[in-house]
Length: 380
Image 1 (spheres, one colour):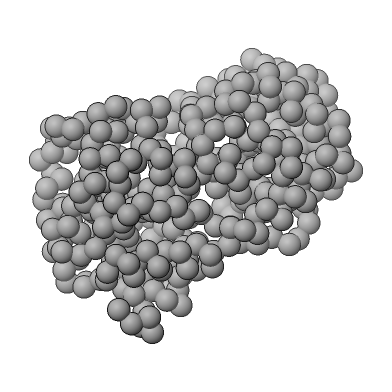
Image 2: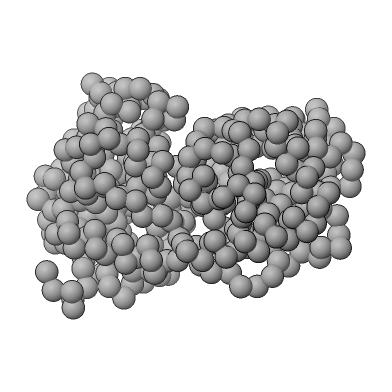
């Protein structure tokens, strides 16, 4: 295939909400714009569709039934997703395959785990190469065991190539076709934090509100580390996929710990840079290993001292004690100790933040785009 012409790539995602994978997709299409004629097929309309259109991407909504689109991971079984989903899914796959044939792309790029399954089947049916972009660890600490078996089997059959967002993610897909690691990227940040560092210390956690993301661990560690000291805490994020009960539990937990007046629940914020600029320390404390840890990379790019869980993708981003601190997942006491250490040592915060910003410069959009282009061309 000539390297002089743009590749036509159809991106497939089951949702149009701005969760981590969808925000990563926005950065990806922006970095690929000079080399790729991008088209997106989404299972619903919403903020992602609007943002893609703003980037000049043609967007088509092929409505996916809510029972499929919002199907919880626990419903995935090797013998079928669920009785209702089993009936509806084949028809959707056929409609998508027909649409793909009309679009004549060089490659189909699936951007979510659900899209990998139905988009992979549709691409295979249409005779078009499919690149799976896997942003979830396919492991039974994240998915039910039947779902793990199903996805691992499909990874050997449906895609032409598999792209994982970290080595930790790729390791959970043994035998996947043409497996490669392409790390998420971050735009370089050169400006200093907007925070007035003469003010009280502010410690925050950023991400979707979900039990596995560990915001409850953050609250426990914050209370243990700072007691009634004049330190501010922030929780940035919202419940996006039916986790409103957990969001309420977090507010109740802050009250029970006696720190409610010092914890600012900020809700969803995008872009995130202003929020990061108001922090001194960013905490990541997922209790299940994170596939990558985009917010960790963003905190590093913002020049923050980052404390992250010592598992999954963040281990590939941070060298403990050099450009951040790593603590055992779910260990509120050890996390509290790290926070006390950073509180007491402004010079350590400064040194870690500067090294983190430098480390983040290895994860450029241009690098990720170049790697993906080679994978696309090899798949065609």
